[in-house]
Image 1 (cartoon, rainbow, N blue to C red):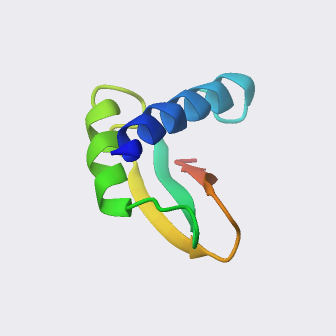
Image 2 (image 1 turned 60 degrees about the horizontal axis):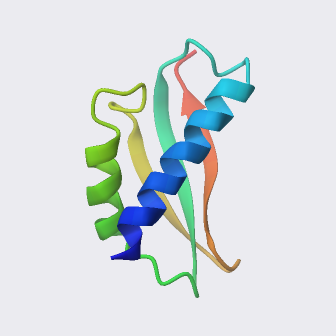
Length: 84
């Protein structure tokens, strides 16, 4: 169930990133890639369910979500792709 809290936190981080990076302002977000570390205990399907609900009617609504397994610890946003 911690995926719900993690989804809220990830959205906060993404909003801050967009706000602070002028190259991302006014661009449509195409894809968000998350890195899932082997000891993160994050279930991508559960996180995606919560996150998809949170991003409805936001600039992230149409973004494709991708999850990559990582040898690093933790769970984090590894990239944000925008339409040029």
